[in-house]
Length: 270
Image 1 (cartoon, one colour):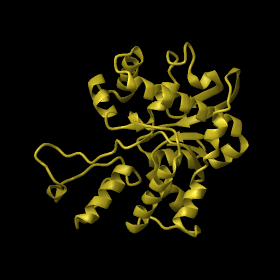
Image 2 (image 1 turned 90 degrees about the horizontal axis):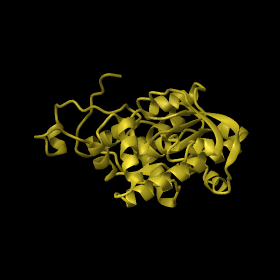
Image 3 (image 1 turned 45 degrees about the vertical axis):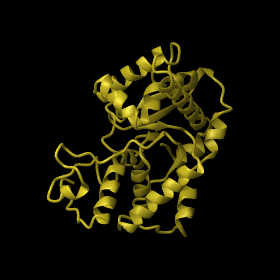
């Protein structure tokens, strides 16, 4: 998803709308490329993914079969945010604090007006402002950002430049997980960030990092993978499982399934 620091959104609504418009255009470009695997754009998509993720085009192509790209904050997406929040609460990872209900939290978590504002944005020949951007290292879920920064896609300039934005990667190598992106928000290093919903939910509730979700980036595509020979979750008993970090969707899924299967997790390496 695409998140924005709340005070930056309030001070720069036009810049955020332009950022979201570039994201939407990139998302639509990806969807069209995926629908036409014989096209030059599809080949370019795989090449961009391979460069960004440091994986082969074959690996990127296989990964794309499990990811759905969309920018829309549909009722189903909001229900998903509510489900993640409930899972964190049930797993004793957080609480609602000052919020009256999960619905109350999700309402504060999301700003769905920027998509409508973005659709009326027009290209600009001049730079209207700078946005410091954070994103995850090598994560194909946020492919729209990679596409939006590619000048070939934009016909000689990036989609961000098309809409009058100077977008600066605050950490060009990318952040290791969504928790680190949220820490960058809290430290003032970034204005906009690409990350998953779970770390944003956890940090907003536990730390008070004030962000708003302004667009979706993808759905699906996260999984728990095991080496050959392990064919069920129960067979992970007494094994070590790695995740991107305690606030990540992968870590949340691991905790959730472990509890369902009657296992206790011993956290190491943090």
